[in-house]
Structures are given as C-alpha cells and as structure tokens.
Amino acid sequence: MSVAENLDNIKKQIRDAEKASGRKEGSVKLMAVSKFHPGDAVIQAINAGQFLFGENRVQEAAAKFPPIFEQYKNVELHMIGQLQSNKVKHAVQIASCIESVDRIDLLKEIEKQCAKIEKSIKVLFEVHTGEESKSGFPDEIAVRNTLELCANGDFPHVIPAGFMTMAPFTKDEKLIRKSFITLRELKEKLSKEFSQFDLNELSMGMSGDFKIAIEEGSTLVRVGTAIFGERDYSK
Ligand SMILES: *Cc1c(COP(=O)(O)O)cnc(C)c1O
Image 1 (spheres, protein in one colour):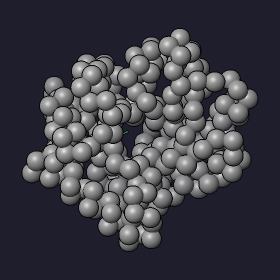
Image 2 (spheres, protein in one colour; image 1 turned 90 degrees about the vertical axis):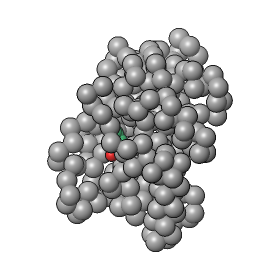
Image 3 (cartoon, helix red, strand yellow; image 1 turned 135 degrees about the horizontal axis):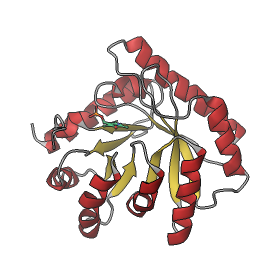
Image 4 (cartoon, helix red, strand yellow; image 1 turned 120 degrees about the vertical axis):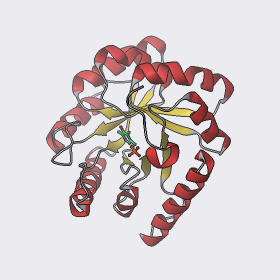
C-alpha cells in the first residue's frame, strides 16, 4: 500500500470512529509521525494532502524538515519525543508545538530560546497515565504546579494548549482505555481551573490504539506505522 492509500484508509477510520462515538465530523486531527522515514516519504504524504507531521528526535527533524518548509509553506511540525534541554534551541526553530513538555526546567528553556528568536510556541503537557510508559509529568499535581507558573506569567512565549499521553504498550484494551480516560479527566479539570488558557488539545492515540483514543475524546492522533510502514531502527 502506498502512503496516499494508507492516509485515505486512516482518515476513513478516523471519520468512522468519530461517528461511532457521536463526535462531530472533523473534530479529530491527524498527525503523520515520520520519524525514521526519509523526507521522500514526508513529501508523498504532503502530496496526498497531509500537512501536520510529528518527529521525536530533534537532530533527525532538523535535517529532514527545513528543505520541506522551504517548498511547502503550510507544513507544520510538532516535536513529540522526550526533549533534552540542550536540544530545545533547535527544536523551537522548526516546531510549531512541543507536545512532550514533562518538566518545569524544560519549559524554562523553551521560554529562553523562544524569547531569543521572538517566537511564541504552543506546548502540550505530557502526562504519565499508564504503568509502563515512563515519560511525562507523574501526576495532576505536577501539571497543576506547572500551569500555575504559566498563569503567573513566567513563560510569556509559551502558549499552553492541552495535554498529551502515550498509553501503555499492551494488548489489554482496558488498560489502554484507562490511560486515555485519565488524560481526558485531567484535561476537564485543569481546563476549568485555568480557564484563561485554551487547553482543549488532547493528543492521544497511535497506530494501534487511535480508535479507542477517539472514543475517549482525542482531538489529535499521532500515527506513524499505519501511514509509513514499519520503522527500520538500524538506520
Ligand atoms: C512513534 C510515536 C508515535 C507513532 O507510533 P506508531 O505506533 O508508529 O503509530 C506516536 N507518538 C509518539 C510520542 C511516538 O514517539
């Protein structure tokens, strides 16, 4: 199957899942996760109408995307992987959103680097919601503390936009669903407490579990393998 056919397929499945769970058509956005796949694959997806991409390694993204941005003005990139502070400088140059904010120090560095280039950037707070996944803020208290600093005006170049999580790597649908429910409930609570921000983005769901994520309120699914095929980690 080609990238274009895979994209068609996934979009159909997203629409079906929206309908089945009584959600408005078009309420779920699709991100194509292109990590470990070459720029050619990204261009195939762009030619099939895809414009939002996700990468999890800054070095790889910084090599792949700038020439693509030159040619395709409406292409957007989100960083979705664990981010070391020394990579933030390059990350904020190429991304419109950092979805993997998991600590206050990272937010400080994002603010510092964005101030230098006078850029505002969206962020999502990644939350640890499943037993096996290790990344993300450990709990609601940690996220609330961080949002309080944002509300306090500590990070004027940072736009808090919502939350992200990765479900545990398991076949147990109940555990996966539980992880998505945890994130949705946290969003419902914190978006009320911090109503000065629009915290409505819920980035959850990948190739294997995006239907469950949509049933539980996802607004953004991050799909790699089902679009581009298996990744070759030996590269
Ligand atoms: C790789 C990755 C994805 C995509 O995973 P697939 O199973 O290939 O769809 C989604 N989210 C994050 C954070 C990732 O690192």
